[in-house]
Image 1 (cartoon, rainbow, N blue to C red):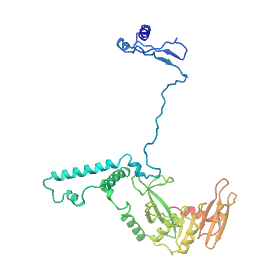
Image 2 (tube, rainbow, N blue to C red; image 1 turned 90 degrees about the horizontal axis):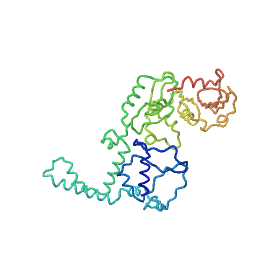
Image 3 (tube, rainbow, N blue to C red; image 1 turned 90 degrees about the vertical axis):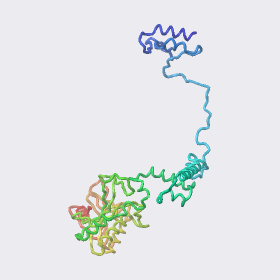
Image 4 (cartoon, rainbow, N blue to C red; image 1 turned 45 degrees about the vertical axis):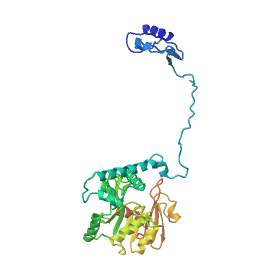
Length: 369
């Protein structure tokens, strides 16, 4: 009876509004009894006789202890062995029994459907059922695998999933462009090779990400062009490492250079090629020289080279040269606080031009596909 009496007393003290209110003069203790005038008489009568009153709690609250302890053994249950394959975990949820059930029901439905047909047309696909036979468990696994894979790899149409041609296998346009470029123009001596990106947001394995380019995502091209005019003489579409593998022991850049020059038919004609540090190496310069082609390019610090060029000790506007036969290496420091620039050339000689190595001036003028 205390609870009912307590609520009645608090209800008489409450404001005439329906909202619940708390007195500013309540005790400063850890809790106060809550009251409200919104409770109807029926609601109060529903309160159990042994119910404890609600108390308002103010933090920090004294530790609240209860006698209920969590004793469940949580975590994975009935899992495969530690050396189990991925498929074993998948079959925990899509079980073999369930797959067998799907196979049985599929075959039963097919048989019932065929039986219900009074006359099967000559070219109906139902005839293949009699030739191939009932669906097997292995076939059902393969079918479900295809469905799951189609959810991961999006194609514009269902038929594209059965297309075995590589997306860039039909290179008729590229072949035409390369053929006509050679037919109607012969480049001057200085050439350059660089990568180019055609912006694209399409879904394809040939889409590349190049953060240094403005578009960043697109189809990457290897472009051989005349250095002065930028006239494209030969280009190849990069299909990715899987379809454009680099021969073992060869740098990708060197492989690209050899393919482009060979396809363009420019070996042994004393052409002078410029490239950036991605393509350049001492071995490439020697290889091109053996094929009657001159070369100039920047060098990355991680390429193989003598320590005099790899780790030069230079002051501002100072340069150092070393030579091995036709191959000239140069390191130049433009100003203090900046890393030195390294170049290689089988064409240039050690010379200065406006306080810079002449080969740097030549590179800045002629490099750029």
